[in-house]
Length: 276
Image (cartoon, rainbow, N blue to C red; front, side, top):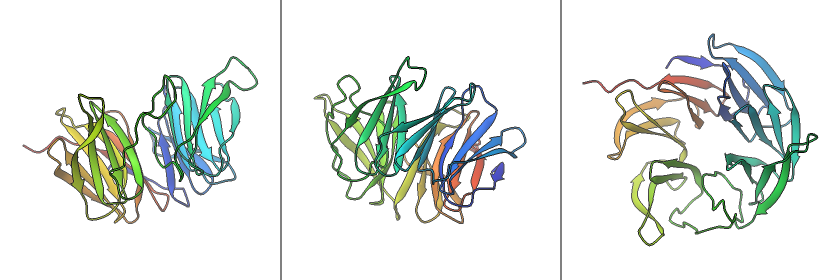
């Protein structure tokens, strides 16, 4: 552990590192986004949004915050701000792909915005992807040519909480106490190649390579622990014990990763080489 960043009063719901910036951003259920100076670890600014943040991501200079019934877009270079209306309820997950913003909402819909030359609002609502009947908790992949669902993976027996596309594999974790590794078969199907069982529900996944280039999977469980696994063996590399559930993991440069817990604490960590 390199640092603890304290200031949020409720759970951290998103962590982002904007491009060409020396600031770390964090969003929280306390209704604020905090900008942290990466050089000093001090909070440089607090933005009060007036409602709890359900998710936060960045793409280039754009920062997107998911809030009840709206997504707020903020350009950290031009300081332009826009409100993207359309979500019903909380926005729990967002991802940017093919110059489109996807936002998963509490009502089970995924809203899609495309870039627009309109200077009043450069984001135009393109469509809504319908299929889920419960809240969309995580987003990773979709058929981006047609925006139609390709297949449904039903192997989890409780809510999937996090998805991770890594190399040729899709990894998913769930409250059913499992992490599943999926791969595409020759026939175009996707099957669970391996299921790793935990003693508790798994809330978040992230992955990075250690200084020796070995892939390490980070998984946060709802017993206040974070597990580090070597892949593909799932041999445990280490474990972090937290006072509260870690709900957000974000990968940074130079073997750094960041965690955000249910009480508002951010942790800054550096993955070291495996002892010889």
